[in-house]
Length: 156
Image (tube, rainbow, N blue to C red):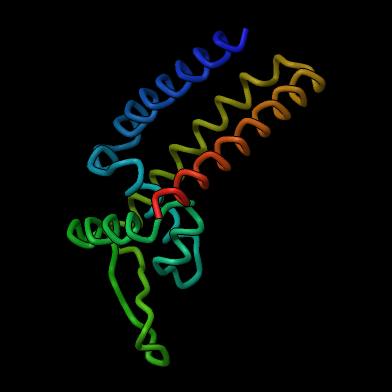
């Protein structure tokens, strides 16, 4: 049974990746020019107050080095602007450009649409089934987070 569950999870990941690609196309050509990490970095910049590498890294649970590379790509695409606060010359912050805001808005709309469809799907299950599913998935997510942290730690 565990193999069936793992295979289902792998299939689920594959299907959601495919849907993500199709939703990007459905919600505008502009989204197809951004990777998953780039879009979620744009999302973080749009949501976090005074976003910097550290805040974005924590928000997305990604390394600072990875975020720095993504930031560089987004700046080259003119999706974000880099700025400093006059009272703090040390820290570098980011804000969305007009193009970045368009990507942010369309990405938000795409997620809202996806969630509405998922809510409709989950209405077929009773409260107990949903609670059990949530409990299993939540425990699995925590186990994966621990595994990820252990791998990151071993790579240092």
